[in-house]
Image (cartoon, rainbow, N blue to C red; front, side, top):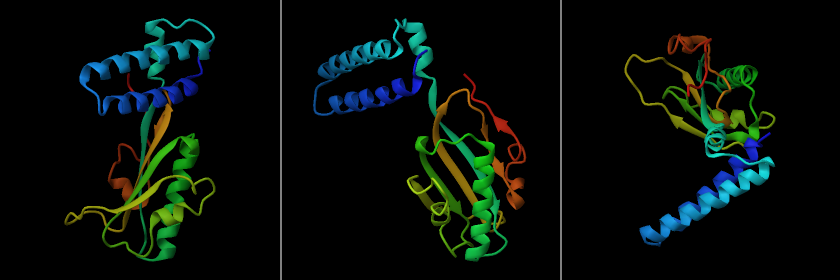
Length: 191
């Protein structure tokens, strides 16, 4: 069986190599370098799998892992550390319960909050959870639109996962009105 994770890791290494080979060289040298790296990459894939991989099989395994997104949102009852802590923890509990998350595969997590929430940072709350200390986290302020949902905390997780894995989004409390179609739905990758 092909070890997709090992191949995926090697692909990133060679991708970095192709990228760096591209800079500071003319186009012809860059193309030769990229072709050479792709050949080495394909040879390594055959070695990893322990068997010959034809081009069709290789292309199928090449898209086995993708960067996927898990979305979620909730609302805080008030602008206080306690209320925001409760809302963020509930949202993260729900996301973790609904999805098979490998924390080593999280690329990044972005929290956005409406302008009426400034008591604490949602990322600081997330870092208090087990396994979240090494996850790249970012807080931003959501663009204000008159009449939009108040005291809202949104979440966007980018994660490497097999393409066939279902992503389950979590829209809780008052934020369920934002995406009623996703509040309890799952989304499967389409090929």
